[in-house]
Image (cartoon, rainbow, N blue to C red; front, top):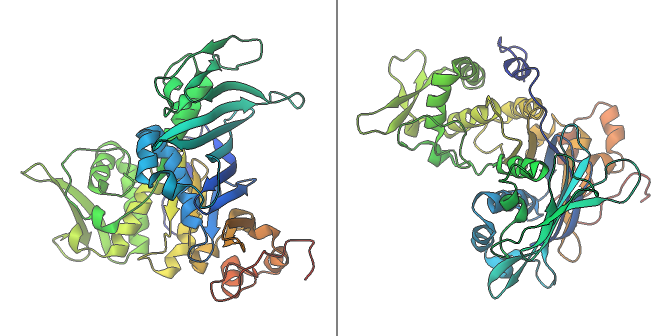
Length: 421
């Protein structure tokens, strides 16, 4: 974040002893639309996806949305919303959709969560679901939750081990996610921790038009995925965290000239009216007449400066409606906020990318078979050397230095470090 704001940094606003969040370190996806088989290793607290239109960026983004919806509203609804197996599974490929993540809770070994889903007679079925870890540097990974088609077992306890008792707990239906079902019980703390982690994700599909609405009055702590409750969150911050809200206004004033403050006022009919106060005018402007960029920047700041931030935040194309010169600062703010919640961002903006490091960027492209592949910018031949010489990553990308991911040239596998042309 800019140092000339004159307000505390985000780290100063948060409690210094706040518990560190869980982190996703690895993602593997199979048979999910164009993601026939793709892996993301050594994920950073902020990961940014680049690539031409149709390269699979939004599909990777949707993997996290799908997993989140499985926990929020159930597998069946998340599956049906995406057109079932006909539209969701990779064309011409057999086998289930597989999502596997490796994540680390502070104080615990890396945990692997594996979910495989297929379809029978139009209904989704959890073909395989398990949790495992390796406690120590030696020995085989130990599964402490293992389910197939609604039947399986789990080991309870804070640190489940081989010596602990396995409890057979059948689920009511094969389309139920075991972690979501068992994670509601206190005797499965590690399963419950994963459930809490995933249900805390915020995968944003922000709509500027939705932020202009007039919702029913009443404070709400967390911004919705579309931003349609922006006025409610402003009301909550004004009542419960006024210093946080003032900081948001201070940053907004530095980014949008003449904006003085934002008001969320209850009306007589029970709705909440969002208004933007511009200096030097006396009367505020209704949010529905405010600029798209002002509302989008406000929504992003409310998300970034959440007093209790989500454990994972996904943002698609933050550059839309925003001035290009605001994007490097926004990228820096996302990185600062990633100390308290992991970020996944898709973008087409070199200005946003200019604020990034090669380790934070994954470039996506389609191979000759039409399947998505991904490579770290740090692993592309020449990029680390250009960066050491003082180049900006976004400019390198715009100039075609990556060697692929450009919609105007033939696409092919990238040259990685150690390879020769």
